[in-house]
Length: 382
Image (cartoon, rainbow, N blue to C red):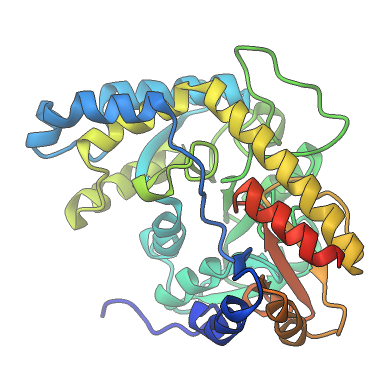
């Protein structure tokens, strides 16, 4: 039957008129809408890509499940950055062509369909819902997925999307709340789908700095104190797009329950969802280059601080987010589109909260350059 139809307000063409207005403003447009990285790809990544450009995994067909080196790098990264021993908890991993396709295909690869229900936060990344619709399943949106009472007794629940740190709100779930989600989902035979693409981008004041060989991160759904020492019914998604500025490389992964990962890898092989060989080598290098990740973390922390201060000066009520790379604010006018119109007059473009399920909010991205955000801050302060 193929993919089912989908519907979504998530359509970037809807802000085209606001961009035209912003481009005509004095000084031109400052785009704080799409969260696309602008900083350099780490040298280690570029070197690995070049060196591997004529390897057997380049001129021959690449390995769907990842080269031995990439698989080793994934295990090393989970141990060092997330305090997770994948083998000890019965977990496996498979690389994906970016995290978005992993999200969009998830419900289909898990064979969800008519009568099946996938739970997700009301305010969230739009592709969760689109992926559920493509599979022909139903979406149940709840205020807080950690409130298991809002979904655990609903007939047909097969999976629960968790996003921590959250895009767009920046909320970070504690290990205790995540563990509660895992327990409740297992009790009804549902899968926990934990989108942790911003796991290394957290900004809590009380988080200690990592040492030279580790990275500070938010709680992982596969951590022993969250999953109870077993990967059963838990899948985690991660991406190198933000940590290593590799959005164009399309490097991401799904890790978790071996009994779910194995069939997914088999399907991915048949439909050709395979990371190119040289890019697999680049991905391994990115996972191992902690210094580059820490440099990028510092850049984003500085930009977020500058952006938060500027938005306060403009009249928005906001604080530093707990995590992720966005500042989520309530529209001063009460409507995201009216605020977008006003901001476009001074050359600034944000994302409408309607894209994420909250039309009374806006999302500002800190992935623009430091110079662009500094310029935006000057305009917002006028």
